[in-house]
Length: 96
Image (cartoon, rainbow, N blue to C red; front, side, top):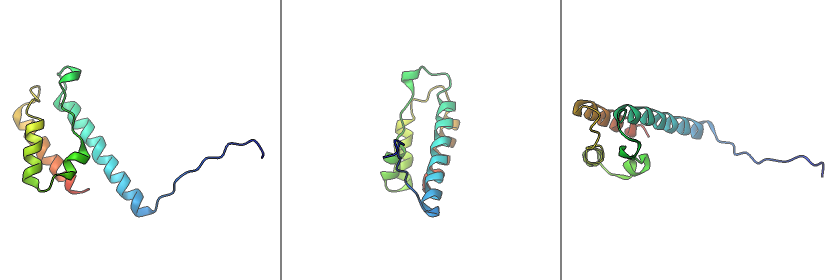
């Protein structure tokens, strides 16, 4: 052997990479928006939202109810801001 380290890298097709980029974009948006919702809260007071868990729920109305229960404690944000976030998240989730 020549002493060089060899690394195995995965190659994805264009379609798979587009899906990965789309998912990453939604996750980054989610992180930014959750930070805004919980701007003035203590670190332990933030809700933890799992995008995969949300996507596993069938139907927009069930997803909305789940998010309203989960984010009901976002006391630092006005209810209108939380509702707007939920509606936009439902739109974003439908793209995945």
